[in-house]
Image 1 (cartoon, rainbow, N blue to C red):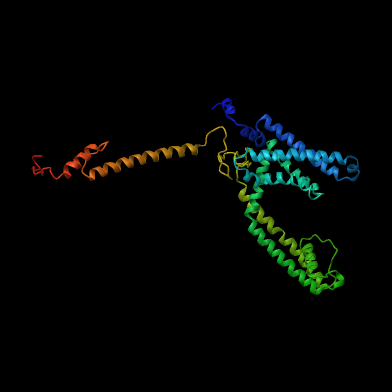
Image 2: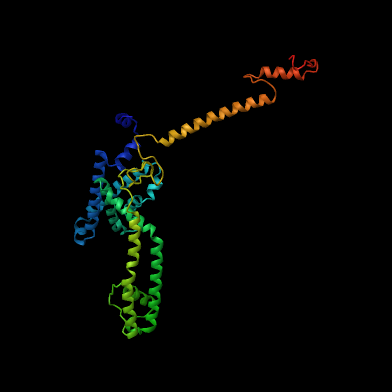
Length: 346
């Protein structure tokens, strides 16, 4: 199929998908660059709006500009959902959640004034810059780290539970040893001290004054240096196991909009959609061929079944069944003379 015929067969929905989710055409690149510029400008306006002197002079202009960007981003989010075959999958993805969160504060400010300050979350949408500048390799490396973190979550969770148990025990112990004048007025306050000490942060707002408490504090600081290497080693090991993964492409899935597929991927790893928009899914051809073959086999089995039934009844196979019915009538008729002809004369 030529590119011209492919362009003619593209619907408005397909065209919107190509502009919004792809980055290999001038229109798509222009859209992405314009979107990133608007995101940067809207975040700058939000930051400037928090300055009292600027808000007093340009507050109304800031509000108008903020709502203009909000309406544009809302329309863009609706178009993203419209042009996908599985919009809910995109809505639940990382980009989809970020897009939604970048809109909600403005609309919520109509009910809860002041929430528009949370619009700075729009800065996370600049991650699309990687796709525009063909830097998906960096996104792939980020996915590698996330995958390693996902694989090591059970070990890290066990580590965190152990650390929490230690700080609770040490906090309760120091609470019993230290006097109230030292600042250990409750077990939660002592647990706070234990967390600060074990992580070697050491704010210094609370410190033990008894020799036993100081000894426990020193042991906790040494223990903190020892255990901080545990999650680092676990995470590094998982990163090394995932380092062999292939590089990622910048193609978006036409089904759910998921990005970051491997370069040799043919189907979306999330929804299973065929990724090559210019070619037909080979699975569909194979399924059609299998269905046709099964239909032919069924017709052959039906024909064989009819032939076997006719042989069982002692009638020659026929297409209309008239001859076999006449033979049955003659055999079953009481007036027909018995056939006593010897078998060798027949």
